[in-house]
Length: 379
Image 1 (spheres, rainbow, N blue to C red):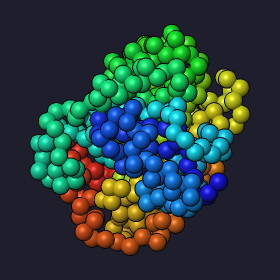
Image 2 (cartoon, one colour):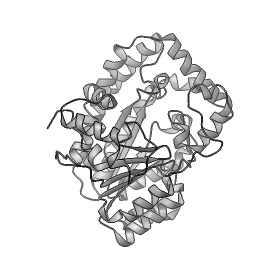
Image 3 (tube, rainbow, N blue to C red):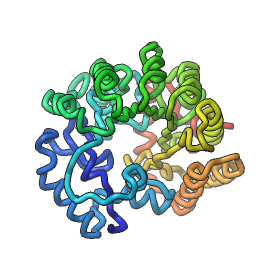
């Protein structure tokens, strides 16, 4: 097995309104799921992986492994037990059916939030940062792909629901109910902003045996409400604490950009608190009950974690080194170590910083916010 091998192009399909991809880190192509196994781009990717060539589209995972010791590829290797596959047989679907979302996160994009799509269509500054999007909601996945998933549930081992916000999408609820009634062995993974208030999501958490939650949290308190616009922190905090105690499996996912560098201390502390909440009730072992995983933003470049002014870069190093004194798990500590190294070696790019200012000031104007408060140190 080559050191660049990844099982995802052989077993996994990422599905959203723009097409199909091998994973969320690789390009999407406008084909249907039944056509995907024979697509020449997929076959080329597979051959490179089997031949020991690192594909160009795998550079994000390679960089993450170098800096932080984690990546989507390494997670997939663990999930598939280090097995090597040579033929395509899809058993894991990442299903992003439509971009309906009640949040407008600053590190997100129109394809994942209809609210962002509306903002972009009405603001010429924001249009510099995204490709053209249709008015209103971007298109949902084709009926052909949705029907393929329904027809192939019996052969799936895992299905991940994201969005948009999956708890707001009626089709997601219907599929989960079908799985519960007829295919309870399928592992259901929901990636959510944890803003739900419908009892259905609490009930399904207690009744579906193979349900895993990943909650997206990039900051806590007022910083969360600014970075992830639409957040009502009291609601999110209540739901996440409940999930930590009663879900059979829950992880925290945090995107680290140049906007939440100075909000990391309370985020890391909150993550550790949730991990401790999750240990006792179901007899979990250590931190395995609640993983705090990270994506350190590299693209879009203007939101890269190291796109800061020289003054802020220097302040970030001091702040992050202070965070290293916290009670941290291995993944949190490795992330901090890699992030500090990245920021120490960063070169200030005034044009890139100005792009960041233009982008966030445009959002400030629309949302009546002030993103500059995020560069105050949050403790």
